[in-house]
Length: 262
Image 1 (spheres, rainbow, N blue to C red):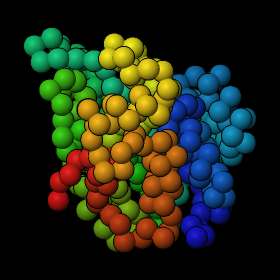
Image 2: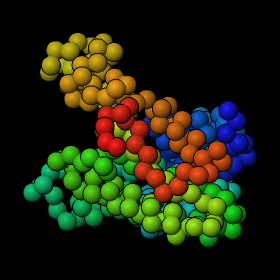
Image 3: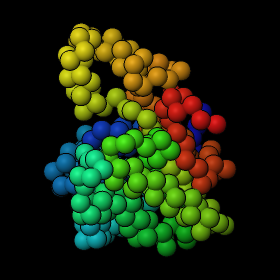
């Protein structure tokens, strides 16, 4: 299927590593002109050169100054993007009764306002194009939060709420707004965590067996595995395309059917 992304300009925040980097790579393979982003010049430029991206920008998206720096760099390279993918976000440890107000606010800065600032910065020019995509990267925890990391799940819940509100506000502009909410993703960090867990439970060191044991005992889903970064990137790429013109204001969970809700 031709996703009709050739020549479309894209900005992917937090794309110097992990799933964001795979998203950028997938979009580039579809012919999009992608600007990648990292927290520092070194990390951004490495990703840009390795992926042969259209450009690379850098800055701290958790504050006003860093976000404005990123916006100005993007505007210099390509103006406002046709497609804005707010992939950047952070998850910090935390428990009820052990979190300060500052930690709650910090999570909101990283996971909500980081995206809001980029949207506000790019939106006037995006509207003038008459077509666009804004995609937020969420988590299945925005539907089914855990008892730990409440500051993170609360922020991610606010992110979904903001997405729906924005989709309504952009009626008639040709811009759709959606959230993609993965369950667990097979990243190097997750694999390291599961391998440490496997040692405690005597699951061995074969990754296929570790994944099988973990899915069976702690993350049951009909697909019987954890998502790959490519699984998530493929969905994001489709939602970014003109083929997804009628998908708007949605929170799309990609968890292999683990959530099990209607």
